[in-house]
Image 1: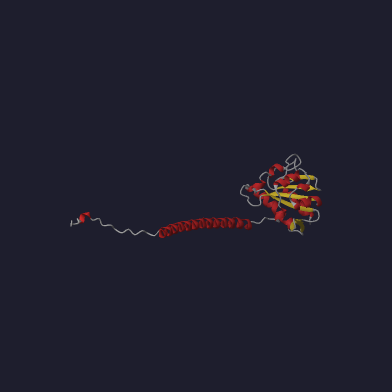
Image 2: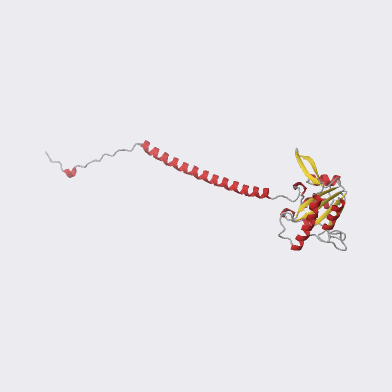
Length: 236
C-alpha cells in the first residue's frame, strides 16, 4: 500500500458561519445609536434656541416695563397724527381715540413736543428750556384733571384731560418713529419762532391752529413756556 505523504494532506479548518441574524442586529444597533445621537443634537439645538428666545424676550420685556412715560401713555401721539391735525384733515381719520375725541369736544387741544426718553441730543440750553416748560406742564397736570373712559374694541380706554375745555397730548421727539416731527411745525410769520423742543401746538375749536416755539420772537408767537404759564394761570 502506498504511503500517504503528509505534505499531500491538506488540513481543512472548520469555518463557523456567523449567523446572519447577529449581523443584522449589529447594523440595526448602529443605526439606532446614530438616530439617537441625531435626535439629541436636534433637541439640544432646539433647547438652545428656546433659551436664547426667552432671554432676549425677557430683556426686551424688562426694558419696556422699566420705562414709563412722564404722563398718561394714552395721551401720547405720533408725528403722523400731528401732521393730520396741523393740516386740519378729517379728524375721524386720526388713529388715536383720545385725540379724536378731544378735537371733537374740547375748545382747546394742545400737543406738547418734548424729548421724553432721551435728552442726549439736546444742548444744555435746549434742555434747560425743556425742563422749565415741563415744570409748568407738571403743575398743569397736578390740577384737578379728569379721566375720560372710552370703550374701544370692547376694551376700556382711558386718557386724561385738564378740564371740560382743555386737553393736553404729548409727542416724544426722541423716538425714531417721530423723527419727522419738525416738518409739521409752522415757522412762518406769526407762528413758531423755531422748530425745536419744547414746541407747542394749539388747536382752538378744532379749526384754528397756532404754533409756539422754544423761544419768542417779534414776528412770532410767544414761547412754549410762556403759553403754558398762561394756561396754568387760567386754571387758578
